[in-house]
Amino acid sequence: MLSCVRWLQPLLALLSSTLVSCGNSCPPSCLCPDHHTVDCTGQGLTRLPDSIPLDVRRLLLSDNGIPWIPSDFLVLYSDLVYLDLRNNSLSRVEPGTLSTSSRLVFLDLGSNNLTEIPSGTFRDSRSLIKLRLGNNPYLSTVGTDAFSGLSSLRELELERNALSGLDVGVLSQLPSLRVLRLEGNPWVCNCNFAKLFLWLTENQHKLPTGLDGMECSLPVDGRQVDGRQVPLSMLSEDSFRECRGILTLTDYLVVIFSGICVSVAAIMASFFLACTVHCFQRWSKFTKSDKDDMDE
Ligand SMILES: *[C@@H]1O[C@H](CO)[C@@H](O)[C@H](O)[C@H]1NC(C)=O
Ligand SMILES: *[C@@H]1O[C@H](CO)[C@@H](O)[C@H](O)[C@H]1NC(C)=O
Image 1 (cartoon, rainbow, N blue to C red):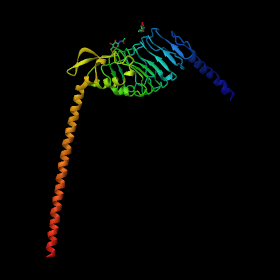
Image 2 (image 1 turned 180 degrees about the vertical axis):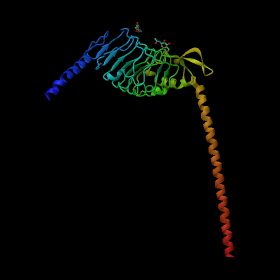
Image 3 (image 1 turned 90 degrees about the vertical axis):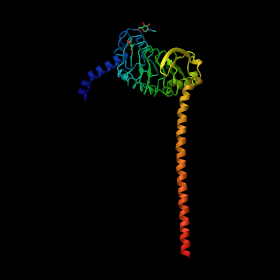
């Protein structure tokens, strides 16, 4: 028993010293103002720093040139609450990167080079309250389930990206949303935009500047854009009545078609009824004459 302890001692010492050094060391060229904060802001980093303490809660990495985050980077930092990656060169967020960050409350991916927010990116980010995705000049695609799972999200920033449209379903996945920034995007006022426009007019109180900062360009013959910008505040539901026209035409077709079906069914039913009545009459006449014959 004693020899066993003696044999284990150096191992335990090594293990505890590694743990302690992991807990206390600060990555080179970063500052660690308190036990849970690592601040590497503006250090010209072109990759993520090594040896970040495992119990980090605030990780500040803004104003660097970090081009990507490996999808398992956050696995070790399960206490992370605040992650600032603003003003880097990120072009994508690998699926699953945030799946272990269920405590993350604040995430800043603004001023990067993101092109797409794929569906499921924030599936496990149920604690996230503020998400900044603005100023990504090539960000043109937001997946239909991109924001599902963000049940606590109150503030979403998508301003000054390259969005020409946005599925309203993406926004209705956010039950706690209070503040939404969408200004400075190249919106196109086509019929797809009509639903978003309706949502925006009904949720104007969530837009910090109302509809004022938002413009859209007018489509020409449905597809091409003629570059003329119209402030959204000058549009009304009526501006999209052509789109409603398309809808009512379909509605009319459905009504006409179901009308025809009902009439055909009614004609067939009455024909069948007439046949039955006729047959019954003939049968009763026949049995009556039979009976008369038998009586004679
Ligand atoms: C972005 O980061 C660079 C350094 O990588 C810095 O020079 C620049 O001022 C930062 N931009 C903003 C808007 O903070
Ligand atoms: C950003 O992305 C665009 C195209 O996706 C590319 O042309 C450009 O070089 C990228 N910029 C940086 C700083 O990575």
